[in-house]
Length: 206
Image (cartoon, rainbow, N blue to C red; front, side, top):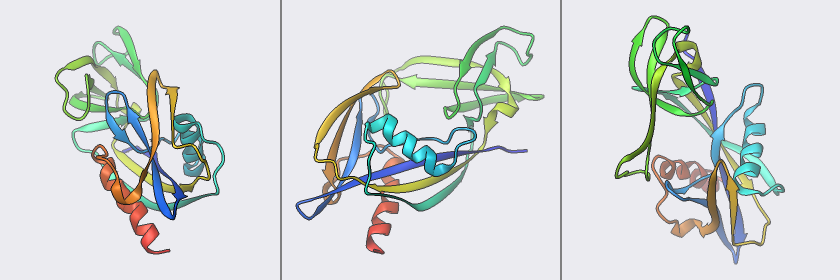
């Protein structure tokens, strides 16, 4: 049975001088992004959204938080780790277990054998156009650890914060956060740039 994993994307806006601004994250190696993350096991989508914004932005108080859309996706040629996956050297749990990959990470499908799948996780020196692969994990994991479907919920959170820029350390990275006018956004990484349409549609319908 194919497994589905939950994801959340969070649009945090603020009104300043009668203009709506969107909070963005400058990743040190992967461009400008929107706060997003994985729904943990035994967590609902809204709980995940609130947890992710606290972890990724440091903001804790919002005027409102509402769901504004949902996206269903079937993955082709790749998976997302459903539960922390043990990585083996062979398609056999008695072989060397030399790595683990955490829930929510996207991996590539290499080949299948029985109840095992050989997967690869590759990270470039930068995203989306890397010069080289800076590290890679390739090995076998049990198919039950993998999700081939994604359900993504989009949330709009309104902030009253008066801070324009700040920095945060999380997930072994140093991030710069800043607010940008919604009508003059910088280039956001793909496919996150397409997510903005959910926010624009919600604003148009208000």
